[in-house]
Image (cartoon, rainbow, N blue to C red; front, side, top):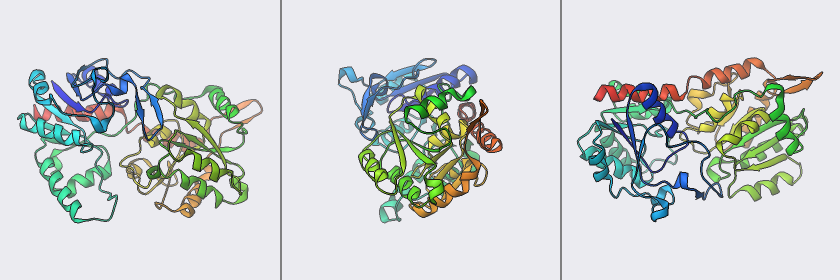
Length: 400
């Protein structure tokens, strides 16, 4: 049996553990610090209170170290490993899967797993990109994580940036197994026959059928840089800017500032849909023509997986971790220099001829460039829950 240690049930990982047990024959018990994501909690970055509307717990065994109703942790930062050693002893797994460094819970969880004497697998959001200029503190951190990696029986890398990170810190090739980052597509609708969802969302926001929509999906926070999209739109030629709408899917502290900036001359058509749960997002992707993720730092960027799954090419900054894996300029999207509104504007201009869905003579054209939409879906199909589960199963069997 494999024990996985998490702060809380996560919308993309619960279904993964279910598949791992059901389809790959690896019994899974998840040891969670708290149940706040199924009980309901307030996400300070989204500025919303919610619980995920997908099944996170069936198909595998769950153990909770605390529950919200009994005074347990209400967010990941408050998660504690109190009771972890006893839980591992009761579960008695053959191997343990850990999944990160931050918050502190993950570092403490790794220590408990390693001290238990069981093989430890690691699958986290590692990247070879530096967020800030290197410092003495970074050198100490590198030494600490290299020590940790050396004590892992196998390491599961989520993409090429992560693989480079591990190799640079001395992890041998024979300890690395590919287990890609993915999104659970079960709640999504891959197709929009006849364009009904597209028309409904656009009508809700008064977006004309022929206007091209650039969608942003995520927290409206400084690190995600949604402001860069408005700044870039102002730098576009009038013919493009006037025919472009930005649809912000998500919420956060920058919402009011974005609304005010977009409304100032020259006008940028910006629309704000707020936070949407997993079963609701497909309609918004179908209403869009391409996705933009301008983050100044993103260890992966799962919304790119979502956009590609829906056939949308993606414009991302070169600080988005999945760029090497998912975004091929001229094919599945464009990459621009971090922090540059001018470079983002040029990327939008490059992608412009390849996007746009139109209605004509009563028929619906599902893509301005069918080859682009097809390339996007084909790329997304290489980063699936099945491949992620297969990698974990391979690592588990290798060490047990």
